[in-house]
Length: 135
Image (cartoon, rainbow, N blue to C red):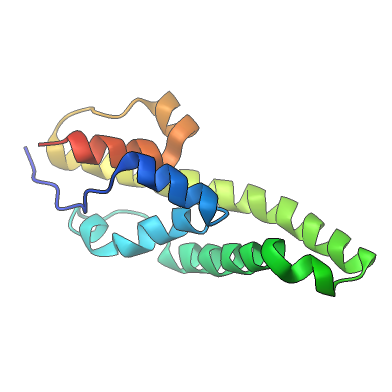
């Protein structure tokens, strides 16, 4: 059975941070744990896409806080359309990364510890919960 070196973070805090930061915390979670993910072996996680997602989410979070005051109606419509497209791209990147990390953790520990439905519903929150519980 392999040892996990992931940072333990309160799961409720991860949920709060995800919501307070308008989703910026999700790609940050992967980027900040890059070294621990790398210790799992060859894991297919694209950090360039996660960094791109982080930057886009940060821009959109800034926009949602104060950006609407500076745009015309057409500009607001454009950003809202961009946000919808980015949501689907972000979900794809997030789920791909979550499942790759979960598979690598299971391979390293030799246990099937992740419920795939819960991974879909709770992504990094469920990963962090299971990491916190792993001995």
